Image 1 (tube, helix red, strand yellow):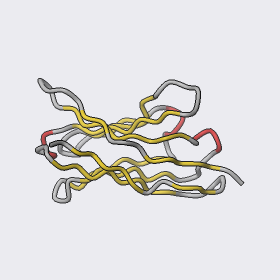
Image 2 (cartoon, rainbow, N blue to C red):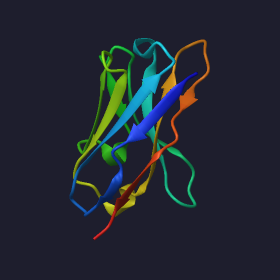
Image 3 (tube, rainbow, N blue to C red):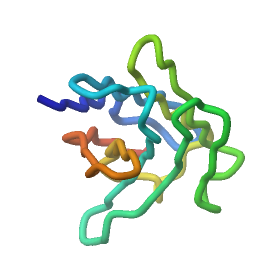
Image 4 (cartoon, one colour):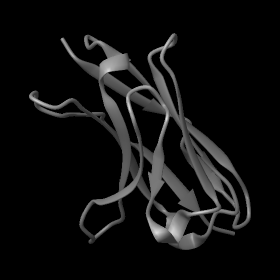
Amino acid sequence: QVQLVESGGGLVQPGGSLRLSCAASGITFSSYAMSWYRQAPGKEREWVAEITSAGSATNYRDSVKGRFTISRDNAKNTVYLQMNSLKPEDTAAYYCYAIRRGTGGYWGQGTQVTVSS
């Protein structure tokens, strides 16, 4: 049974930081590329960042470049999203997503991030 469990969300003031974690089980984690997506109320889910299976390459949506960092620890089956200089427009539910060529993708249940003063 595949499980992706996000944690680390919460309420933070503008300019603050949070680190999200996504712990995977039931998959060969090191074979999967990992992504973070987010969905704000009333909006479609949008891609935020991605990292290759070995962690050798990353990519970010323009609005988070220079503020967010995706990383992974394959020994711990965990992917992270370090979020700095948070803005109110970053408020959303954040989801991790595991994908491997030739197989389906898997979603976590999400963790809420609220940026507000």
